[in-house]
Image 1 (tube, rainbow, N blue to C red):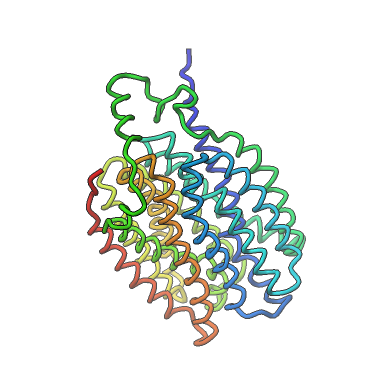
Image 2: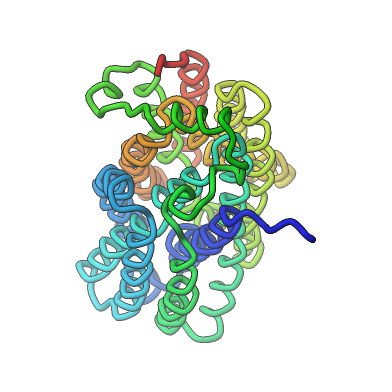
Amino acid sequence: MSKKIFYGWWIVLACSLIGLYVAGTVVFGFTAFFKPIREEFGWSYTQISLAASLRGLEMGIFAPLIGFLVDRFGPRKLMVWGTVTVGFGLILLSLTQSLAMFYAAFLLLGFGAGGCAAVVTMAAVANWFRRKVGLALGLMGSGVGAGGLMVLLIVGLIDLYQWRATLIILGLGMWALGLPLSLVIRNRPEHYGYLPDGEVSSPQVEGQEIQDTGVEITLREALKMRSFLYLNITEFIRFMALMAVFTHVMPYLASVGMPRPTAGLVAGALPLISIIGRFGLGWLGDVFDKRHVLAMATAFISLGLLAFSYVQVRWVIVPFLLFLPLGHGGITVARGSIVREYFGRDSFGKMIGIMMGSGSFGGIIGPAVAGWVFDTVGSYQPIWLVFCGFSGLATVLVLRIKRSPL
């Protein structure tokens, strides 16, 4: 008789596909809308990129609350709500007639994405895994990285149907894909006769699970822990730099003479290559010290940003596509593994929610500042070098993290 697949892996698959679609449309795909929206309305790069910052603002405010809600009510209800809201946000964005309406649609997208991605999907997976949490989060994150495929699809849809019709198609697709997959999610394995990782019940395993779920870190205790502060600063820096890159990659490459189709390929390749980092560094985090894996990822981002600053020299695009997406993918998984190990399962939602809230505030600053720098000096290069230095600082902070006594 063949061994039955542990249900936790179906949850990983469902979260992966939802993450792929949300990341591909709301985050990675936005860069493809820059040119057609600018041509229609004549808005500046700063005005358009501020929309990404507003999306980050709402997610930043909402992420800690989502973390508390997912610990209290479980991820399934939040996934359904978030999926419905993202669909409405995309359709509202297609009806844009003014800058205020443009921003309002992105606020709604931020609300929705907070409920069906990131905090919720990571919590859903972390509830079902303990020893294999790095691998599980890596596989789930690989789906998010595959969202880069959506960039190529979106570019093609815009060329065929214009940007407004493309957004309607994407909104309807969110409902068609997201709602059925949300119903696959289950809250905790024990409620359905399982144990994390699909382990068979035994006195030793039961003892481990009691220890794992019985320790809860309060918000006040977490805020007093230096390691938690360092993790929050690192997440702030990461999101600040990466959201600026994802938002401006196509306009930046166009500014140094790269054709739009080629720039679209580069934009799509970033999240796709990050799959290697998500899966590979996720597995390494289960084998080696998670701090060292996280530090390696932040160092990769710093090197990638340095290369990004000089892509007018065409061969430099190779180290950029090697280092930055590997680091981005690695951090996305390693942060969840560290929070799961340091703060336990019962505290995971609120701790990762607070961290992602910190990161989202970085995401507010990054795209807007990058757009302002280009509008002011006519070049993106200075801001990429500044972000390179900040990422180097994050590497130092990660290495200073100490294991906290639980």
